[in-house]
Image (cartoon, rainbow, N blue to C red):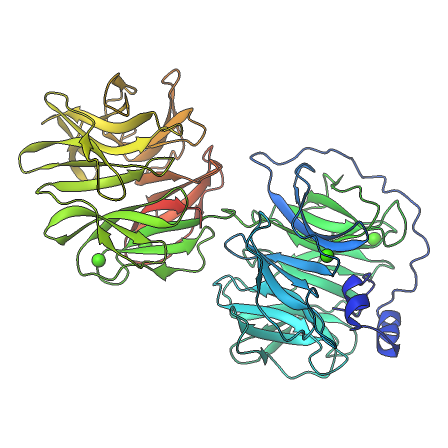
Length: 604
Ligand SMILES: [Ca+2]
Ligand SMILES: [Ca+2]
Ligand SMILES: [Ca+2]
Ligand SMILES: [Ca+2]
C-alpha cells in the first residue's frame, strides 16, 4: 500500500504513488508528525534471549549498496544473506508455503512497465519470472494451498487495489470492485480470503475480502492511521501498525479484529510487523533511535517484551516475515482417504495436499531420495509386496525389486546410491538387503540364525544401518495385538559388527537415525502403549519424546534435524503430526477421518 508513511523505493522506480494523490493520502494518514525521533527506547535490550531450537530465518527487503534487495537473516541476528543482486528494485518478499521466496522486481521492465512478480529459491537459485506485463505488482503472496497469488496493483489507474491470480500468473481478477486505495494483502489460513487495508469507508481500516464471492467484512474500527496488516501463519492473530496514539505503533488483535493490544510505545515509526509460525514472536521495522526512515528490524515476544534489534544497516529494512514451519521441506505420507492406501504429498505446514498414486493395491511406507527428486515405496499391486520408484510428482513409476518375498520399509542411503529394505516371508526370516536405485547390486546385509530384522535406517555418514530385530517367534501382546519382542540394533552396512542398542521389554521398532548421528528414534510399547522414544547411540540412554497414552508411531526426521513427523491416534483415527526434535510443539497436520500414516520428509 502506498497510502501510509512508508518510504517507497519501489514507487520511486514505478511512479505508483507520485503526485498529489499520494501527498493527500499521506496527510490523511497522519504522517506529518514525524519530527520527534530522537529518544532511544528505554525498554530495548540488545541481544535478548532467543527462543529454543534452531534459529528461524527472516525474509525482508533492504537497501544495500544503494540498491533495493531481498535479504535473509536468522532470528538471532546471524546468517545475513543477500538473495538478489540487481540494480533494479527487488523487494516486498514473502515465503511460499513450501519455503521458496516470492518477490517484486522491476528488472527487465520494458518502457512504461513497472514491477513484475518473481520466484526464487531461498538459497538464491532458480530465479523464475511469474508475470511479464509490468503491471506494478505489490506484495504478492502465495495462498496456503499454493493455488493463488494475492497482490495489490494500480492496474490502469492511480490507486492500488486488491487482486488475485493463479499461481502461474494467469487469470488475474479483482476480488471486489473498489475506487479507493487498498492493498498489503495476507491470506486467511483456508486460502479463501485476503486481509488488507482499505480506505473504502473513509479513514483506513482493515478488511477481509472473500476471493470466492467478493464479500468484504471490516475487521477494525480504530479511526486513525492504520496499515501493513498481516495475519499470523495459522490465521488466528492479526498484526498491523496504527497511529491512533500519535505515532505509528505495532498492534495485535484476534483474526476478527477483536481485542486490540498495543505492543510498542516509542516516538519512532514502528511498522510492517509479522507473527512467527508458533505465534510467540513478532518481527517489525522501526526507525527509533536513528535517522528518520532508517528502519532497522526488531523482534519481540507476542506481548511486546524481550525486544531486540536484528539489523544495523543504517538504511531501510522492511516487510520482514518469519520462515514457515518445515522450511524448504514437504512431507510425503500414505492415506486411505480415497478408499485405499495411496501416497500423498503436502507442505510441511499441512497445506497443498496432492495425491501421487492411484492404484487399488495398498501402497505403503514411502521414502524420499536425498535430493528430493524420487520416492521409493512398497506396493502389493503385483501380488507380492515389491518396491517401486516414482518421481516426486508421482510420474514415471517403475518396479525396483522382483522376487517371491515381501519387500518392505525402503530407506534411501544418505548419498543416494543405495536403498536398504527388509525382505522375507514364505517361511523365510526377514532380513535387511540393499539395492541400487537402478535395480543392480542387490545384496543381503543381515543373516543371524533365529532372528528377524526389519525397518532399516541409515546413519548420516552411510556407514551403518539401524533396524528392529528380534528372535523368531518371540512375541508379546500390544494394544494392537501380537507383536515381535524386538529391539533396536545397528550394523556396519555390510552386516558386520552387530550392536543391540536397546534392552527394553517391549515392542521396539521403526527406527530413524537422527541427521546429527547421535540418536535413533523409534516406536516403543514400553509404557504399555506406543510412544516415540529416543536412544543415544553413544551411551544407550533412552528418553520418551511423546509421553502420550495413545498410539504414537512412524517417526521421521526433517532433513535439518529440527523436527520430527510422526503418526498419532488422538482423535479417533491416525493423523500426521510434527514436533520439535525434543518433543515440544506437537502440531497436527492432517485432519481426515480416514487413516493417515507413514510420513517421510522430502527436500522439494
Ligand atoms: Ca535490486
Ligand atoms: Ca512508535
Ligand atoms: Ca492404492
Ligand atoms: Ca486421519
